[in-house]
Image 1 (tube, chains in turn purple, cyan):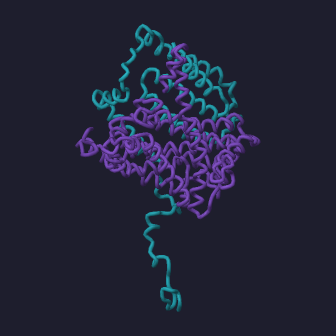
Image 2: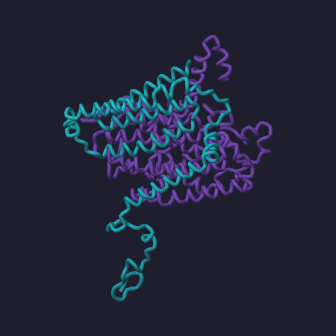
Image 3: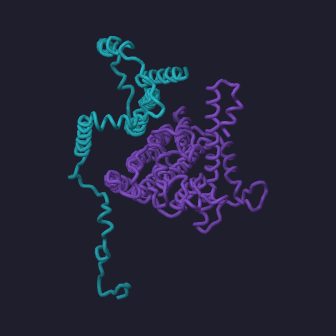
Length: 362
Length: 201
């Protein structure tokens, strides 16, 4: 379809058409993503509400339809946040204070450039995709520390310091977990990593790399500052942490970044360990007429798996009490790091000896 | 054409950011400019089709090293007045050293050794060229021994850094989780008088 549109625009110079097509593809990815972020906030409140035997938001309807109770809530929230005043605290560093939310959001969106949604469905298919993801997720910490510093507030600064130390620590465990995946797949290309898992549910990397899979997801929860690792916000001791001084849209951008990162981590867990767009059902079901599109490989499996891991984020938040700060550090450095190193060595050995069924092709 | 525009944009950004690192008074701003400089140089490396090096520069320097830099610089209570004291007095000496360094730099990396005549523009690689794979091949075959030596040096540095900051004799009250989980009822509760388990005498 995009190729057809490009052919229609052939009266323009070729580079202009290329840039326009890239912008169009970016819009196709970012707009649904922003929609997902908005509705994740509603789902979060609903899910946690039901887990705590409450109903959750149920006042704002959509289009006046009664059975959509609560569905208008994200839109109402967005309108409220956009029309609120952005208060800049006295003595704050004006430029950095306003730049920090943008710095937080930009890498969260840019990382989506290489995520493979389906066989050919991706913005760019680059060789070093995994490395690119790792580099961009490591940038997300800047928004937080700049915000904490520029706010000229002790609570915000304490939150930023906690968060910086936590993210840098968990990035190491996360990076090592990814090293295991790239050893197993023999490629840094996310599409190739999914293809290497082709077969059945038992061929996906969650089985041979089970500890790495767990560590990757838990580190992802810690990276995004979500409960039970949300000490950088810790409302009981430092009010709201790094974004305590923010209001209105500036505050909303931090929220957008956090939720975009959550969805990204869920999507990556699906791609790296759970076969991305591959179907868990036996192959012959995918070859059936009509219903085969649904049972075979496709973007819907990617969306379904991502949604499941996103649900886990909310589930964790409703279930676990917050970790104490020293316990977070202990878990990252003394538990996760040694496990990943041992498992990388084991994975390397398995690849060298072509352990079937996962590494026979390597 | 497009490549040249990108090249000059990134080069201008590197130079501007590097100049700002030196000129800016606020150390946090200076560190942020250094981050920008690293980022822009990563862009230049990307133009050279060295995507592994470019992304690793962002990952290691921007994502980890500079974060710790920021961490330290933000915690410092730097008194700028004291730092600027005696600036005028040292200017002549500083100028002499700066001139010396400029001359030596010009001699070493000047056009005589790094001119365009000596370094032709690199040929563009084929579309299936994989920089990560090429680097890996070179490092683990041609340059295996230097690579291993560098790894050993890094390992020694890590162990030395830990050994320097480790103070085992310090009396800390830090909780030990491995002991905490092993606590039994009898360690914490002492029954006085004749009481049974329910606490009735």
